[in-house]
Length: 117
Image (cartoon, rainbow, N blue to C red; front, side, top):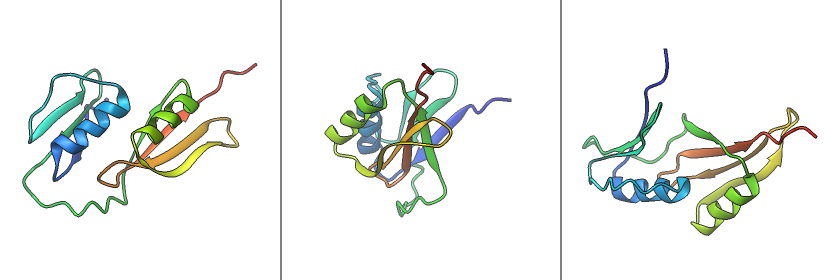
């Protein structure tokens, strides 16, 4: 079994979708105001407004992306104005993690696993 889709529910699909497209470096022509596919291969990432009001107090979910160059991604996250939780920090198990909020206050982690020397 595989996870088929991660969907972020939002009150503002265009705003949240634009953030993720910029963050992930994706331009796919999807511009619907109700539902947008952001990542479409293997496990998809979608942004959706199901018509109910969201409170943007997302405390029980986070997204984690594995990246090659954490410093490059840190600079991009700062450039697009995301609110940082923690800058790049080496963990005892060797990963380097950073965390920040998307415009709806979902927590996002970027992590890298430096190659052993």
